[in-house]
Image (tube, rainbow, N blue to C red; front, side, top):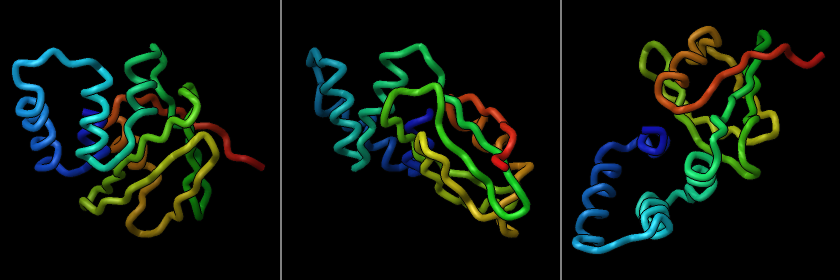
Length: 137
């Protein structure tokens, strides 16, 4: 579900699932083969996402805070290089892609970004934890 939401294209995701069946029909496959197939077909390198979700027990945490002008966010509790890109969807359905890293990123607050709605839309669509932290002084 997390990868499906990150791809943000249900037709492509369905084709990837069907392609897995067609490509590996009646075969014994390795985890690596499946991971590489999904990354290749989606044109997104999901290797760090697979490392996070398949090889650790840690649930990645998106730390965030906001001030009057920006929302700041970053990943913690994750493997080095974790780079799950996510779609933030506001109440009116406008989508904004964010690409958190382990370094603080910022998103300008405007009429399409509601900081109070920001966490709820991400929490329900991705297997992550959220942590609102105090802003930097």
